[in-house]
Amino acid sequence: GVQTCALPIFLSQKVHEKSIMSLDKMKDKNNTFVTCDEKEIKIWGFYKKNNIYIIDCETVLKDFSKSDLVYLYVLNKSNNISFINEDNKVIILNNFYKPFFNVHFETSELKALYQIESNDENNNLFMVGSSDNIIFYKISGEIKYIGYLRNDCYSAKSFCYLGNNKLLIGGKSVIYLIDVKNVKLERIIKMRSAEFSCFLRYNNMTL
Image (cartoon, rainbow, N blue to C red; front, side, top):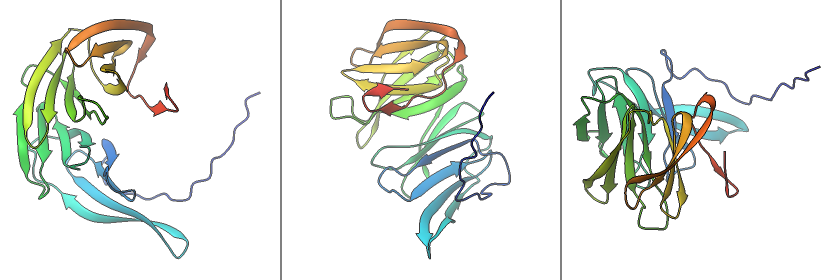
């Protein structure tokens, strides 16, 4: 038989009226995270008071996108909030929560955002993943276009930097190994029918 075990839940709280589309944490803080539903982005404080865990809404951001939000990502170090909407726009907010990067990708269905945090030359390299290509930018005070890879079957929904210029990209039934230094495809790893929607680096392994 199958044994089941109920995991303890120390906090459960409704934070949005609509479905939560994505969440991430502020990279320079251990107790602040960000969520978004279709219309709003909320910034939350997470802390313990009188032996009780509390989630408290610090900021609500809305009315900055005409179409629904589909994905959110907090940039490394700068903690600028970036997101994708249904109009296939990538928007990055500055520290005053005003858009300073707003690009419309007309021909691609956007899937994910990712920024490399590393000790090599690829640090801060920023990627936009879509249904048929991956676009590369460099963020260092300004946002500079680097290049792109196009392939009809990419469907880039997830990224993971392995170091040594190697980037994993999850797609439909395949994982792509990319050489980010030269912006080129190195290898396609075919898997059984599955969509690779997330990666995690853990103790020198990739899950």
